[in-house]
Image 1: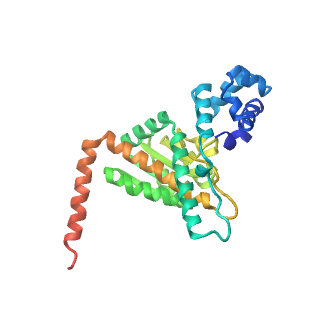
Image 2: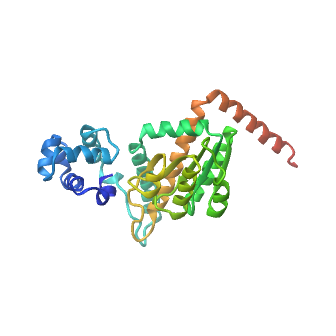
Image 3: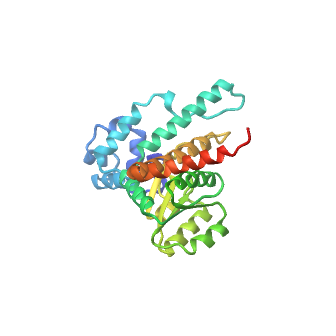
Length: 281
């Protein structure tokens, strides 16, 4: 978290973050005042840093640091190098995927998650948008939320999306998906949706970004090691983390409306059985 956003922080908070990164064992033993002294800042800068990274306070930050210190090298991200054996590729990609899912869970803002579930549950229409690899995540989200008998759209082309988003209302929800949080097309769709009064939800990597800052509700996935050289092995783990977040949203909506959802799913199964019944043997 600190490595991802330190370059975007005000100077005093950046100093605190850099001290923690360089001296994690010492930082967890300090009070906020002592950490401020050691980082040549102040206790106020320490508290502001905690808020900047979405934590409740300094004790929460120390818990996160302690958790990271207990991780063994075996659970850290691993780069894929030229000439890797197939076993090494399997082990590293599996480990990276598990790590991305775990870090995404650790970054979860449950208040934002609850707000997102409430918005999706009550929406008249839901619109998912993403381009490139994020477009695949948007398509997966549409396929899932159709099961809730919702009017759900998915767009990966900004022109088609613009025509549809032009007529959204305050009862609609628009979800913008972009790992970087800076994809131009996704940002414009989010801005258009807000201009039309729709509720907006972003799904980006952790940290400040134009898309996350634009959204009414910001959801984050792990940002660690997206582009390790020489291969983009991190892109596979980030995709898994995005899909994981969509699964969390869908299952949360379903369990919150279990009786209704159960009826919808029964009707869907009945329809699928009907389609299969006409198949030639």
